[in-house]
Length: 339
Image (cartoon, rainbow, N blue to C red):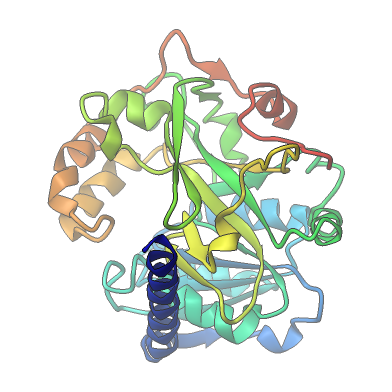
């Protein structure tokens, strides 16, 4: 019975992967090519994929951060921005981007669009898939850029690296701060929760489900199981047969989800510095609540959006000032493994 159950589960996961690949392939018709420099992509280039909307304020530093890490080319879907996002992307010499007016939620929160670009351009490359408010850091990232890390991962037989999404926030309400495009968001969002995280393993997908941190503490204290998922797989040596299932929280085949430590072997991991709480977050929350595009059951998050719209101060006496990657290793929020 158990053997047959295992075979049946594997069969269903294969079917699910094929359906998601088909969704990605089909979604290509929703993308209008605005600027295509993909012919310049060379073998061995590290590529970044993202869906954005109204991120002109974040994109200058976002692009510079990932360039310093070693990203060679950015492939970005602009979901009908109404600010200067398109102008920023047009001016960047290493960005290809596409525009769509299609529904973000109907496209699996943008993942269908990125799946097509990953199928078309990501095969055989190390790829980073992130949101515009996520800045990847990892042990020694300031002295050992991504080409060093990915070469080492390949030597270890590891085709991915996991990361914890870490909410950064200011002391005081976000809209009381000042931020200039191109500035390091960590200059403004320089506090985080060092403790208060929990995880459980999910056998079906063989992944961890990590929750906690500032948003769980401030917005989901009464219903912690509804708090945002914090585990992600941003860095993958891509194959056109791979798919992300639920954002970048898990993927198929299942082996891509084994980002956690195995018995006797500690795996290197990173942190995605989450810069959601820049000035303007309250206006964005009101817009997201109106658009109903960011959660499968958006009506269940009305309280969350309402709280964000109130421009909350997330800081408390237990908050920790952010000082860099070594601090995150010391707090066991990421691991250097044998890297």
